[in-house]
Length: 260
Image 1 (cartoon, one colour):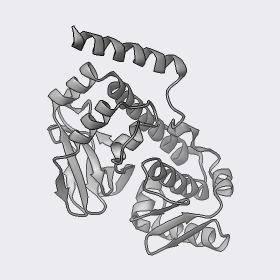
Image 2: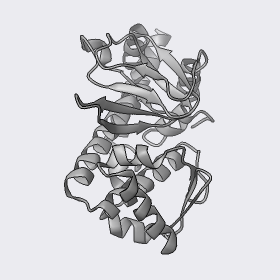
Image 3: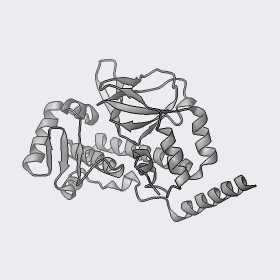
Image 4: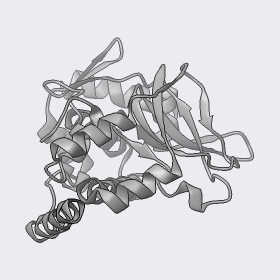
């Protein structure tokens, strides 16, 4: 079972959520904080205050180098969760900034523990979400270390479309893409001029349409070939059968315990 919120839609890719699971997850997102575009919501060196789920908008993780250069690490979209384990840290080692007007819902430390202790399906799905983020980080390392400039751009555009499709925020391989060429450059280790040249080439070759911050992938197979990958690393195939069976056992035990 899934629901309308991006968080529920995302986690339902891993396990089938019960009605109770959906209500619990929806309740996490009720009390939102609003941030304008270009707002730092977490700064490098901050003491972590809570986890949060991004409910609307878009943000990015980044590091600033001593010379002022910026490396964008990953992009956060609706349904993404930040800081489930951040309370283990003394201070943050990166910053998070909004790209557009964005809404977040804070998740307290006590709530995080409660989710893992009393909601087996949600807990497993949150672990899966963390594993997906690790996979995204690995793919970013491969892109920056081994892909050509064209391959880096193709990879990132495909990834953003696939991730937004998975939470119900894309249609026909098209998304809203509020990124500037400077932000793409900071994410991919290129210059804005180089990014512009590659995007123009992709338009000419009818691989993409990009206008007024709306991106459409017109030839996904060719873009995947240029990037040298497919979307399997995003782990949208769901939990293995043995994992689903184990989660079902935990859920039945939880229900039986509540009845006694």
